[in-house]
Amino acid sequence: MSLPEGFELADMDALSNDPVEAMQRWLDDATEFAGRPNPNAVALATVDGEGRPTLRMMLLKGLDERGAVIYTNLHSRKATQIAANPKVALLMHWDVLGRQIRIEGSVTPVSDEEADTYFASRPWASKIGAVASDQSSPLESREQLAERVIETAMQYPLGSDVPRPPHWSGLRVSLDRVELWQEGDDRLHDRIVFTPTADGTTWTKHRLWP
Image (tube, rainbow, N blue to C red; front, top):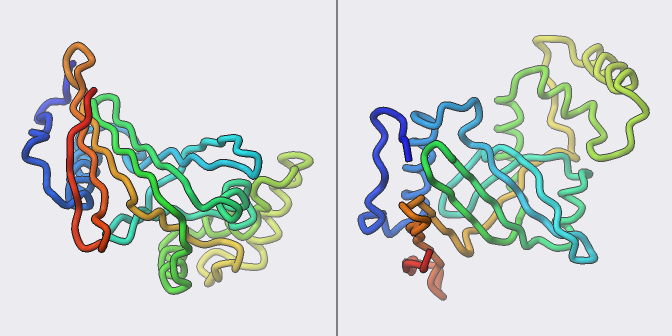
């Protein structure tokens, strides 16, 4: 495997015993070496009421001991599925680095304060889009979308405060199971799994066969 200049594969035996610390290190590496616009891109897997899986790409916007955070319209298909079944999975994959991070957990909402702070940090046009979009609902045409965006932009001109709509917020995925995967020669990959202890105060760490 050809790796980016200056990047070195991790010594998996030396990974931190704290998966948040280990994941953050890999995210930092991805930001520096992966060479793509969104190193924090993450696939979110949900299931509907009949157990049919759905997968889509999103952006990871927060990570700490409480879990991994994404933001979305709460009327969207993903949010509707999560409301019915909060068990989800996340996957981050950096092919050029030969690494993956897998997270499995349950979703809880972030606080209004967290959602407000993140929404306020978004560019004006992104805020307008979040307010204007009826995400996942049928759309007659791009013209209808453009008209809605223009109407919203007239309501909140550039430079004005755009309040976070109540149907837009963050979702936090608990770290019930975390796997750091690193590519190995001859498909003999390195896999380290973290799970919280029963009292939630520390982590167990073990290897998996490739």
